[in-house]
Image 1 (tube, rainbow over the protein chains, first blue to last red):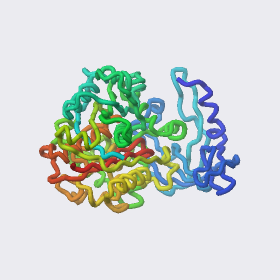
Image 2 (cartoon, rainbow over the protein chains, first blue to last red; image 1 turned 120 degrees about the vertical axis):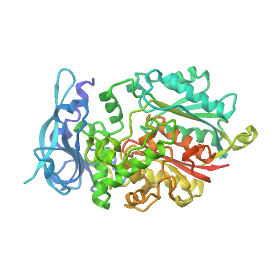
Image 3 (cartoon, rainbow over the protein chains, first blue to last red; image 1 turned 90 degrees about the horizontal axis):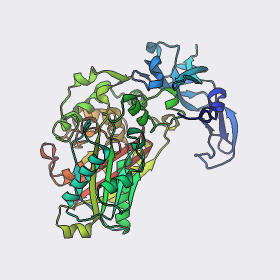
Image 4 (cartoon, each protein chain N blue to C red; image 1 turned 180 degrees about the horizontal axis):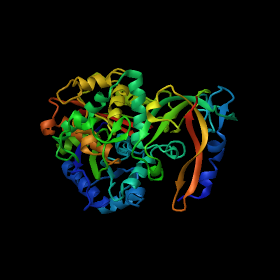
Length: 131
Length: 384
């Protein structure tokens, strides 16, 4: 069982969608990085990711990790946001038969799972249909 | 660099080995390799192991295993790069012998996975993915490869049936491997109607949870000649990395680490994909075997499904892949897999593979991959 610090140091990304971008090649990174893997620059500035994008792959998890047992089956996708950032997240409030590649989605702040025996709530982003 | 040869191999029956401990499985297997080689000592050893800390609550196993093998104080090194740990153990041993630092090196891999239940095993395997940005969002390993499969099916028209053909072919091969965990055949229908794990992947698309080890003795070719043993040379070695999170890759269907490791190994050996007689590759999931075939240049991009469907990768095909049964049928004790692939290629090149022998095989290749493809180790072997 990890200490709370592991959780709260990710809060800027998970709650506020903070990213950074390279001042030289303009590449955007989520989560933020200390060095640009494209051009090697260490000059990166804080920014935020776009909140809308499209599904570029998805699956339905039928056999989940233990902390997600009460949610299965659920959909997880890789999303390409409108600013080019790609990230993984659950796709919710969407029937499985309505899932398809290219589907427009937007980010919402949600509870992700309960952790450990005391049931600490862990929050973050999920994707919902953007209609 | 000195030329390096494999002179001994060891592998015991894989499966759910409830009555054997990590150290017992390891020592039995390592002794087989030592006996097979005929050497009376080793100078150094490498142990590939992904997660003994989670699976059996034991770290520091390099020393533990050297001690129980009766080899202390020889230097012993544990190597970890997820499911490619075994392959990397081989590469580091190869480098140590090639460089002249040591003459006789034991390269080995082990994983004891059934001392924990399914949830903990799932967690342990999940640590090979990005804990904060993949696992935190509910993904599993079958899920990661399912995401790759959906992207591959969309981009190239790969079909659900073609994925199943990989499992059918590997189980057919594995049915001829007495050391395999699941040495029996499965039908297309079995695969296509097995339980769904992460759509479109079903349980028979997935490699199993396995206890097992594999070992080999390597030394300079000059010493191997004096021992009067069948010689299999290691002529190429490559190792490469990629983004651990699949969302961070430019193209989810392309295994860049496998391409890069393959390129290095082909260059060192002076070979191209067409020169290879037999391949052992990392089919942790059926889709993985297809993507690996493309990244290694065995087939063109997008053509892997068709090649499997037409029987080209079967034992009697023109590009046999996974004659051992692969991870799918033989089992996948994650740290041991990379060494077991080498064991199979050595058997093939010595013509000791029985019913699954590829006739006249002279050059073989192993490809061992970590996580969803963030690390790959490739080796090329040739008859001495």
